[in-house]
Image (cartoon, rainbow over all chains, first blue to last red; front, side, top):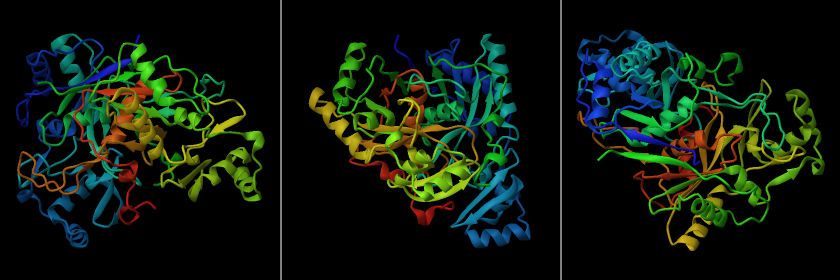
Length: 250
Length: 250
């Protein structure tokens, strides 16, 4: 049997607003385009629509930057109100250089601008990451289960940069129902080597796989991953956070 | 129309040896499993079989470690012959800590162990990255074109770690026939924002998408990416190397 899987974009979702029942809209959307969810599917959902449904969009006019935010903003050439929002989302500043403000978010993610982003929101607004993307993923999973009876794991994704390599990739910032890491530790390969440190970040690879269909402009904030064998687990995205003791770049 | 694409594993390839005609084996393999290549397909090919076909496998018994390699090996708890091979593949050592030897390869990739790897080779051997993975990708592309008349872009991939996030992801280390980066710079999103720094690392996302099918143990070193709209270009993986002047983590 040929191992294969498919990435299917969910088209036709409406513009998402605070309080929208995202799980229901996704279930309706997949049914409307004749790709109803099936057992064994996973969902990759863009952070942006999760944040919108949870009201995590802020009007810049309502933001009063602190003195520290103003000073950093001058150095970075950024809007001080954005810097204020970024600092509010952050546990610490990792680097501030070359116009980039790299922080560790309250969730533990290290990313530019703490996930504060102005794309695909109103011109005078900015979106923040969901307060707890794992909880967002779990609530979506539960809502889809309630509507369809199926346990469809959910990955909430965002595009992050990374050192050394050009370009962003889509990664998982929230996970529910899926083992996000595949471990080969202690397994023997066909040649007889015992694999020692081999952990694969499956949830990140699937978020990345979804991105070419989601795009930035195409208003496809949800994709179905269909046909892939994966391990179900009550795990969260925390499994994708590297333990600081094993990280060379804190 | 639903935007969708498929990742299809190429099964049944033989164990690859030095001098094997990899392009021909792939074309035969896809035909044998009734998924012959089509116009619009891309190929993701594991570095390991490219290296094997190019003879980039070294017997450890043939390696004489230098004094420096011996000293580093003691500190790292590694086989000094492996350290010797790693240093031979490297332009510089980026970090040596916590048992990890992170280097910049002659290609410019920053990765653990310079791509020197013992999995899926004989017990007393190690594989090196292809000398020029972009050239390897281009030669495969040309060979497939010669056999089928189709221009099938090729990504040569390897699994790399990254700071801050747990687990490896598969990334592109060689590219031919594909624009590896999608740029949205200067494009307006639906809300009217002009996107400023948005480059997406498409080739890395596709390498990652292929990995869950390739696995580490399943002997599926080649996948077809089918049905995706992408931009053809005479580009290489060099587009994925971040310019040091824009890198905060050199």
